[in-house]
Amino acid sequence: MPLPRLGRLLRPAAFGGIPTGARLERMQASPQYADGSFRNPTVTQTMASGSMLDFARTNVHRADRVRRTPAAAIPLHRPALAGPAAAAESDLRLTWMGHSTVLTEIDGARVLFDPVWGERCSPVGFAGPRRLHPVPLPLEDLGPVDVVVISHDHYDHLDMPTIRALAHTGAQFAAPLGVGAHLERWGVVPGRITELDWHESTQVAGLTLTATPARHFCGRALHRRTLWSSWVAAGPRHQVFHSGDTGYFSGFAEIGAALGPFDAVMMQIGAYSEFWPDIHMTPEEGVRAHLDLSGGEPHGVLLPIHWGTFNLAPHPWEEPAERTYAAAAEAGVRVAVPVPGQPFEPGGELPQDPWWRTVAVPASDAASTVSKVPHQAGTRPTPAPQQP
Image (cartoon, rainbow, N blue to C red; front, side):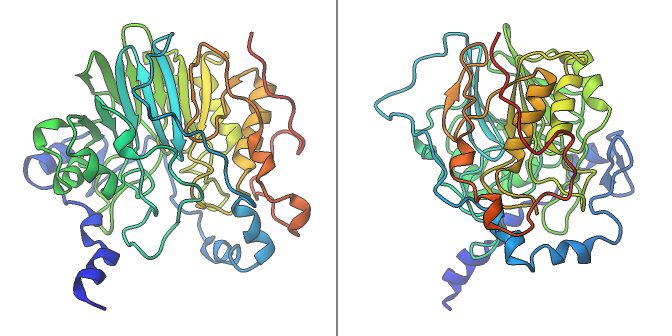
């Protein structure tokens, strides 16, 4: 194979940069940093002890694999490209592009969370989880973005080709400590990068962005030195929360008490497993975290994220949406489950049609695929919560 072609496949630059100098010193000074890496707010295992072999077995049986992808094409909403979209009537509009990528238009500013337009979430071009649906909108047609917010540097949240494209725009970048080294290597001007520790804030485009705690882990390739975080974006009229990746922990209530309540919560509810229960939430835990953010009472709208786009866990493809749908109804939480690319305003009519059922592999077509994380409600979902 010619060397240039091999280089494109291996993509060594995708490993990112290594924090050095003043950046590394700032990381080491963080209260979250000890013994060469960052720590979680509570004791956390990235993989349950002794579970690696059991996890490997989940890939052996075809019946257990078939339901991890949809049976038909995932429906998409492709916005008209005749010109820029009109401003949201309420000054708050969310567009889920798939996985954890959300364009948030809030109080006149455009915030892009965890943008991933790449075909694979992987450091190489020939292997790794591949998209289950196209991106609804080409990146060049997205329009101007004021700030790009990164939750952490795992490949399904920080995508080198996407960052390289966004580096040529006028967008500012906000990221947790250490992640700026990746952004710089991929062409983002250092003056447009703000790195924050937990509980630190910055002002961008009339918004206050605050990095808030999360329960996860981080690091590109062999360099597990960067911080992970959830985020709050607050404007004059509205404020929203993006969870990034996280296990459930008591910090959600603390975040809500300090910075909430929120008009919209973008919450990770997919890629969970009993093999890594501390670092990803189940749908029921995601709904519980949403309630914690508002003091235990339903407030605002829950947008489920981190599901549907990549096959990253043993559970059936549609299960995160189905279980969130049921848990939200039981808790009285307003939930929006749009098809990728479908914009909505949290203060208006919400997309709640269970579209995923039309493309999921029926359970009867596979012998034994159900999540090993037990449901907290019955297997039959209740109707989606209606708007007041």
